Structure formats: structure tokens, C-alpha cells
Amino acid sequence: MSGDSISIPAVRIGPVATEAASGAKTVAAIWFFVIAMVMVAAAGNASNGTADQHAPMQMVVGMLFWVLIFASIAVRYLRAARRATAAVARASADPSSQWFLSGKMIVGVDASGAPNPGVTFKLSRKLRTMLLAVPAATVVEKR
Image 1 (cartoon, rainbow, N blue to C red):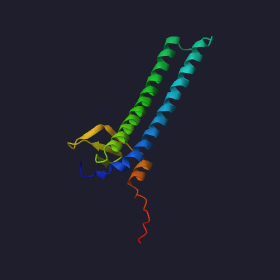
Image 2 (cartoon, helix red, strand yellow):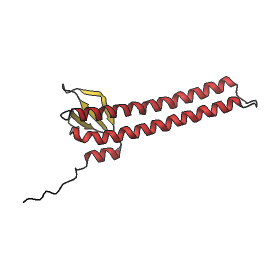
Image 3 (tube, rainbow, N blue to C red):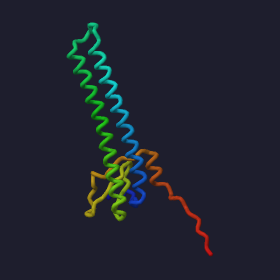
Image 4 (cartoon, rainbow, N blue to C red):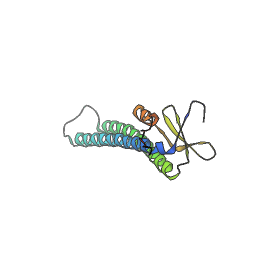
């Protein structure tokens, strides 16, 4: 990797990637809820007997436009969750795997040294701080 990347041991990837996947799944669920509410509103508007100023087809196209926009956002977060989950699986299966922190991205590297996009995911500021924090020390008594 380039000079501005920080090497991260595989044992540190699991907790951070699990937290990133959980957060991405939560955001995706919120967007799917918004989609459901838009669809309920569209169904309620369609069953409304009053004459609207817009033609019914324009309302359908408008609602479909927003549903597609919201669905694309939700799918993006689901892809991020899937990548973070794949990173957890790879880091736990192969403790000798190479990982780098490059900016806000965790990059998994394959055996040839090439980045693997299937396990590369973005970190929040909180998770980046958590990843770079000094591990907890343990007290060892000498006898």
C-alpha cells in the first residue's frame, strides 16, 4: 500500500467491522421504512376520491422516482454492511491477512498485495478512533 496507509492487525478488524456493519444495516432499515411510508402515502393518495391538481399518472411517476432514489440509498448501505461482514469473516478465518487503514477506509489486501474491494469498507470517525486506540493494558504480577 502507499506510504500514508497504516498497517492494522487482523485481530483489530473484527470488532470495528462488526460495528460498521451494524450501523450500515440500521441506516438501511431506516431507509426501507421511509420507502414503506412513501408507498403507504401513495396508496392513500390513490384511494382519495377528490380530484387533485395533478394527473394520477404524474403522481405515480413522482412517487416511483422517490422510491427509486430512496431504494438506491438503502442498497448502498446494504452493500457497505455486506462488505464489512465479509471483512469480519476474512479477518477471523485468516489471522495472518493484511489490512491497512487509508484515510477513512479499511482495505483488505490479498496474497499478491492487491487491494480486495470485497472486504474494503468505510469507517466513521468514532470507529477510526476506536481502531487506532491503544489496546487495554493488563497487569501481570511477577512472582
